[in-house]
Image (cartoon, rainbow, N blue to C red; front, side, top):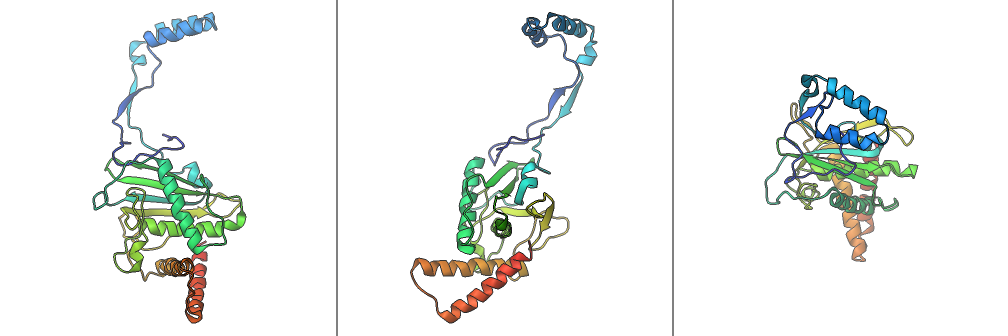
Length: 290
């Protein structure tokens, strides 16, 4: 079942509709059929008469054929994923906590994600352009177990040189979504669409895919953190894991430099030189993912 272009169901809004019977046989001659024949008799009397004669000849058992079905949101292989620069899928692993689950529309979530990715861009990639409304799309729903599931797609932008930056920003956004670090400065970089509060997340990243290039729709899978066999989602708890460490260094160092600029202060030249070298290493590490 395909969903609408802007489907969004969170906790409090059920997507797991009960099973319903779908009629698959030829319609029986009921009031709806008679109404259709009356409405179309003026267009083609011959067609209306043929339909009436056909319906009258149909055995009752044939018109009553039904199939029991459950409607579910189509999550895999969506057009948004194929057309995106980066696509992130998440699953909710915690539905209780200090922050309550919320009822929210997809458009509001997209606005929040847009604000977050532009904050990351401004902090880490100041030479790149801001994301505009419509560049970030989100859809989410609640499965039969009551856990939220969501997909974030960063659309391809027209400027080819932005792909590497957008992929790096997408990976950093994935870090925010799945970050389970509990101590140190790394615990601050958390957010998820189910709770919508900075510094907390109830989600795990299940996959991050990126485009294989500007002129292709082939997908490449990105991974960081660790995975436990038989369990869904990535485990991002170790700040010393190679790629996680690079992301944290980039976020924390650039945050420090931005705060100095806001205060119109200049860090010492030796300190700045060391940090610039570290930033270059972090960027090179993220580039290896692209």
